[in-house]
Image 1: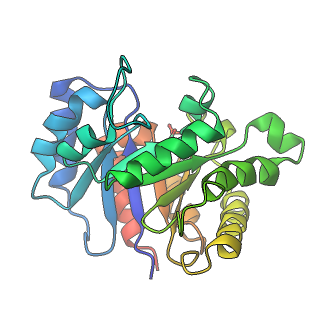
Image 2: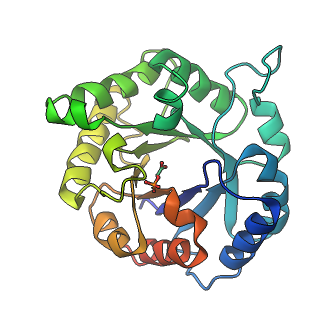
Length: 253
Ligand code: PGA
């Protein structure tokens, strides 16, 4: 019922030549595209080139962030309509590297989430607790407040046409993947929260796991009933790893 989705988050990596080679490799990979959806989110300056390489393939593309306004005096920022012009399908919102590295609070993340929707982009909302928060037993409180910030804006069915990525901060880029049970536990909990506020959407919304997912761990994670794919950082920069994860997702029951 929920087709798996695998998204590559390239972060601040890649020059034009590398990006083109990577795109060529994944666009021509033998994957059962009827059983998995894929997207890559390169840095802004590479989006156009990546789009050129992916047009006509099964793979979509997106951005890693956007501003909450559609235009204005915001030096260095990029707006939703610009991403729309580039043919982006997705935009990552509230990644922990934005929340923790650039001081984005829940309110800012919520404004960006709705800016994406207003511009016809599918937001990939990232949620996740730090190690200290997990150790203190605060995972649900933290993830819940990140989720509620979206619901609290008062829009009807905010998670329709949206994707959520649970990315425990302690697992991002560390090589420490959450166990399938740990991830599933949070995913189920998130789906239940959405069921309270948005019952019509809860069963349809895709919940991705992110945090050191690799080819080796992908099958086991995605075998969990509420893990509908992955948001992949490091492993999305290596064609064979990313393709391996796509194949694992395509074999999901
Ligand atoms: P990682 O990054 O796969 O390198 O841990 C995931 C992410 O930050 O989206």
